[in-house]
Image (cartoon, rainbow, N blue to C red; front, side, top):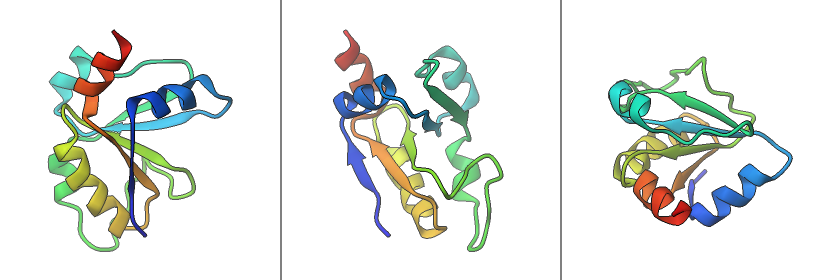
Length: 109
């Protein structure tokens, strides 16, 4: 399996759609509390990257389903990409928000 990147525009379209979008924000909790993508169609999760970096082969994150795609995000996309590689190797369906929340904010303005 390999993860793909999605543009803020595509994420926005999905949020406007019928299905809930699962967003995994891997920033520290304080940053998550300051700002994260909120919408009735978004199920927003915050699992700090340090927790994901510590996962071992065969680990399972109870908050995440392997049945549904998860969009991983951070400030610029770098940490999200590292986390996506780990989650992908554990069998999760992951996508990375290209440019992270910085790109999302620019797109929304």
